[in-house]
Length: 136
Ligand SMILES: [Zn+2]
Image (cartoon, helix red, strand yellow):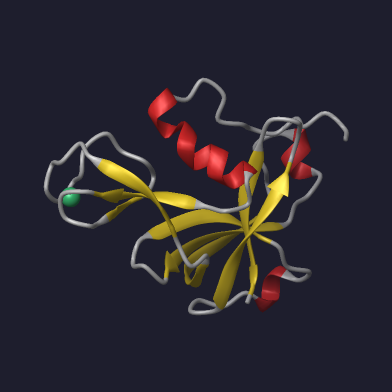
């Protein structure tokens, strides 16, 4: 596997690690508030609805719909530019919260708001996997 030269969440706080471990296992789990049941993504130390600090790491369906998207034509680094144009999607998950990721698609012009998508995983090096989406 070639060296991965894009951004990784190295240095993240230990309490966020379960999310990234779940990606590595290809079985995404998201913080779910023990106080009110709300999903918290990205992971947070306190619930923004009930202020509870307690949460579990809950499996999710992995499916959702494109809330909005952008086609990246001028990327932040040469490694990303090599893949441009590529699509970043903001997805309304079936559980009601939103996640962001790259959408694997041959032609960015085919992406539509409201399109059904599902999570996929990309193992980028020996330690990290990242979340992506593909058309469902
Ligand atoms: Zn809560």
